[in-house]
Structures are given as C-alpha cells and as structure tokens.
Length: 419
Image (cartoon, rainbow, N blue to C red):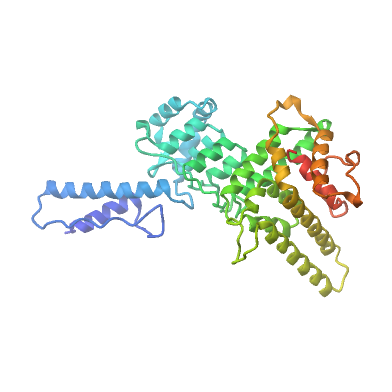
C-alpha cells in the first residue's frame, strides 16, 4: 500500500514528468509536502494534496513565465495544433485586435497555450506581425480568457531564437521597447541545429541593416542617387536601442573587426557611440582607460601585430594576410573617426526629420553634410578637402581586389547609414 508521499510523487510525475532539475527553470524544485497526520480522514487528505498541487503549480508557472527557458519544451503535437490555428490568427494580428485574439484563444487554447505559458510559436507570430497591443496583452496575462497563462519574453522557440531576435529582424523600435519593458534580455543568444548559433539580437539588427542596404542598392539601381532617411533612421534606432542593453559591446566590436567585417563594425560604432564613450560600460579586465575607443584601438593594434608576425613566419607571399592588415588600417580609421567626430555625427543623425519614402534625399546632399563634419574634425584625403563628386554609393560586395581606400570606405559607410 502506497504512502501519502508516494501518491503525491506519482501524481506529480503524471503531470510534469519524473525529472526535476534544481537548475532547470522549466521544472523548478517542488515545495516539500506538508506532513500528513496518520489519523487524517480522506477528505482532509485530499484537501492537503490539492493545496500542495496548487502551490506547486504556482511555483512552476512563475518560473516558466519569468526565467530564461532554453530549449523550447512545447510538444510537437501542440505546435502542430498552432499551425492549424495560424490561418485564423494571422488576420487578427494584422488588425492587432486584442478582443478577437482573446476570443480565438478562448476557443482554441490547446494550440496557443501549454505548460502555463502562451506557446513560443504563438508569441513569436505576434512579434513577427508587430501586433503591439496583442503582444502587450499576452505579456500581461490578465485577461480572463487566458486562464492565467501569459507569454515569457525570454523563452526560446523551437527554431532556436527569442522574441527579441524577431523584433530586431523586423526593425520595430516600439516592439523592442515593449519587450524590454517586460523583462526581455538583450544578451540571449541563438542556439540549435536550425539556426546560426551564438547570435545576439544586436547581431541580427546590425547584419540585417547591412543586408537591407545592399539589397536596396541592387534591387533598385535607379535610386542609387537617393538616400532613404526614414528607413536608415529606423535601422540605426533599433540597433542603438539593443546596443544600450547589450553587455560587452567592446568585445562585440572587436569580434567584427578581427573578422574583417568593416561595414558591420561601422554600423555598430555609429549606433553605440555614446555607450562606447561611457566609462562604466567599457572597462575590461581591470583597465582604467577613459573610454571604450581606447580599448578597441588596442584590440586592432594587437590583431595587426599578430597578422604581421604570421606573415613573418610564412614562407610564401600571403595575399590574404596582407589584405587583412589593410582591413585593420581601415578599421582603425573608422574607430578614430567616430571617436573624434561621433558626437557631431550622432547629433546629425538624431536631427533628421521624418520624411515620406517618396521624398528621399539626394546622396550629394548627404555627402556634403558628412564631408563638413569630417573636415571639421581633421579628416582630409591627402591633406585637402573631400571631393564628393568622386564618391559613389556602394554597389557591390567588398572583394579582395577592390578594397576602397580608408576615407572612401569611411565615407561610404557614413553616407549609407542615415547621415
């Protein structure tokens, strides 16, 4: 005959599975079962067990709603049910109708909620469609139709990324702000076989900014002489917001530089200029240097020294290493330019008024502004003024044979990213 404690244990395993890991936020440690008097009657015995289950459910629900959950634990059958609901959910999210969303959830909750939370796929779809009001309702979880379920902004979905990655991909500043206000973490990384691993939301914003600008220049070649202020500002505003919440921003910049990814480097430099300049966010390994720009320059010089030493050890003429050295020179100029002119550049970026897409500004006008700012901070090619007539927008991927000079690269990046 089983004891009361054994009966509770068997019932618990039926509900949540037998494995409970003290370090697993999906299955936090259960509260100890209350002592059961030996002469308790069946009614009191059942009441004690039910009270313990209620307490256990609340602990589990709180942990699953508030802690970082990796990986997604949603059963495949629940996700399959979600895809059956999706055709009805999409038009509701397009209208961002909270009332219609709650009505749908009340009818088909089995495909949209499981394990005390709104499923990650359901919440990802809300973020993907930028349904701000529905997303807020899901994060709050106060509507009676949700039965106490709510969304966890730090729960990975089955594809290996988090809601903040999705918000960064669509460049929704409002969605990023909403998720952050409800506790979304900017330092979560992608993981799993179906995605590039180790990406921060910041990486998604930076790299998609570069991709958007490249595709824009090639898909619409006739607009090559125009600058889309509104889109560029959204790109940088999203990146800046994520950079403010990302730890070790100097390390992320150094990783881009060491990989020779200059365009990404420049975008992040522009977006995070104020953060890099701040002492509190830029100290590293006990360094007492005044700001992060000094640390980044040290990183570049250290990388260049290692490349030079590698060339010295090589018996062959290594063109790849020589190109990498030239890339470090360009990176050093970019960092120095933003460290000196970054405040003026940032003020110029923030001062842009919002304009319709059909009122894009000619590149020449943007080049004039950039030239004026750089000239005012001592950046001249061969000692003279910058001749904007000799500069053009970026039309092809950077190749080993066609590496622009340092100022040409600097001008390209600043002009194409919102200045």
